[in-house]
Each structure stands twice: as C-alpha cells, then as structure tokens.
Image (cartoon, rainbow, N blue to C red; front, side, top):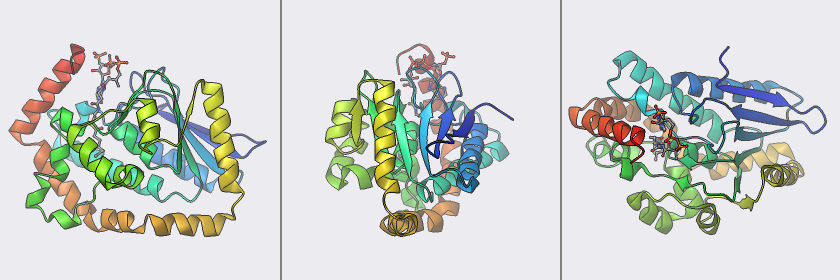
Length: 274
Ligand code: CO8
C-alpha cells in the first residue's frame, strides 16, 4: 500500500483525517488520486467516522495540483486512466456524505484549490501561501474547458471550475479565472474562496473542529440531502459530460502544441521561474 494518502479516525471525536503525503508537492498523479478516493470511501464506510478533515503533511504545501509529469509525453492508456481517476476522485469528494473541511496548510494552486473547493468548509493558514486556479497562466489547462472544448459541445462539458465559481461568484470567477489569479489567504477570505484564516496549525485544527461541530449539530440526512440538492446542477453537468470531457482532454493534451507548452512550463518550474 502506498503512503501517498493515509487516514485515521479519532476515537474520541469521530473526526477522520485524510492526510496527503506525497513529497515534494502532493502532485496529483494516477496513484495519488486513486489512493485519495479509496481513503475517502474507507472513511465513509467507517461507522466511527462522523466528518473528515483533509490536510497535508508536506511542509508548506497543501497540493501543487495535477502532476504535470502525467501529461508530458504521456502513454495513451495511462493518460486515460489518469483523467478517469481525477474524475472519480472529484465525484466522490463533491458528493461526499460526511462533512468535509479542507485545512489548507500550504500552497494550493490549481488542482490543490480544486480539492479545497470540493469540501464543505475551508480553513487556511495565514502565511505566505497562495490559492487559486492559475490554469490560464500555465497556458495548458484552461483550454481544456474553453477554447478546445468549444469544438466539443461546450454545454455538456463538466467544468471542474464550477465549484470555484460557486464559491466566489460569477463576477469574481470571470475576472480571476481569466487572470489566473493566485490569492493570498487574506484575498481568498475576502473573495469567499476560504471561510476562515488561522495563524497556526493548532488554531487551524481548532477552527476546523469547531466548524465540524456546527455541521454535526444538524441532523445528518437533511444536511446531506441539502448539500446534494444545492450542488445538483454542477454534479449533473459533471456526470452527463464526463465522457466528453475525457475525450476532449485526451485530444487536447496530446496535441504537439500543448506538449510543447507543458515541456516549457516544467523546464521553467525546475529553473524556479514558472
Ligand atoms: N507537477 C509536477 N511536478 C511539480 C509540480 C506539479 N504540479 N509542482 C512542482 N513540481 C516539482 C518541481 O518541478 C520541483 O521539481 P525538482 O525538485 O525536480 O526541481 C519539485 O516539484 C518541487 O517544487 P518547487 O521547488 O517549485 O517547490 P516550492 O516549494 O518552491 O514551490 C509550488 C511550491 C508553489 C507549489 C510550486 O512548485 C508551483 O508553483 N508548482 C506549480 C503548480 C502548478 O502550476 N500546478 C498546476 C498543475 S495543473 C492542474 O492542477 C490543473 C487542475 C485542473 C482542475 C482545475 C480546473 C479549472
């Protein structure tokens, strides 16, 4: 069993912790995404578990998002499995039965922001970290859901960015998705992308537990039905469009121009000039 993602449940509080531990940056590769989903499902089936806190054991990093190496010079079958594993993880997280809190204890760009956005509540450490969907700045991902997907029935494309739009509102999403803004914690709070800030890991934990207490004070079934109901449009669009999304992704990512851009991005990242 890999150690990418692990979980435990506190016997006193019933709070489960899902810990992301893939050094150096919790990059979301196929194995990580599969482990993440499996750990979530395991916690869901554990009768002792009442709620889940998602956090990271990697210093200063919540998650740097998709592991770009999965998309550079990919092997087609692996690439397909990779994207399916992202879709599966998202589907489980966004419709999860138990309350979820993201304890964002490090940088959280792109897919890291996606994981946080899939939770019910977000507490972020008020340090020099950033969070947001910076895809346009990468020049690689935004076209999956805009320019390229335009040729593939745009209305049915599931957009992972929907959850972001739901949090910050259409106007701010319009602006910041175009700009690929990475927010400071204070800006994320102001824009509704996170719910609370904390000055230490300990305080973040206390605030996460306090938030969970509020969720657990509400009867579980009506709360869950309300969550799925509020999210139903986004979920339905995701479920209806996922095959289309897969094909769009596979086509787009294997285009020579896309490969070129990503290789450049990785080189810049390694040279510390993203
Ligand atoms: N994938 C693969 N490798 C990565 C990634 C990544 N996403 N991020 C960093 N690395 C590598 C670096 O190249 C470096 O490798 P090496 O040690 O060989 O040079 C190593 O990890 C450590 O990285 P840094 O030295 O940069 O670590 P820092 O602590 O200085 O910085 C950061 C951490 C701020 C997270 C920085 O690494 C960074 O900015 N990374 C890029 C993040 C990024 O752009 N991610 C986008 C991925 S695409 C994506 O997630 C799409 C999401 C789709 C859903 C949303 C749709 C709207």
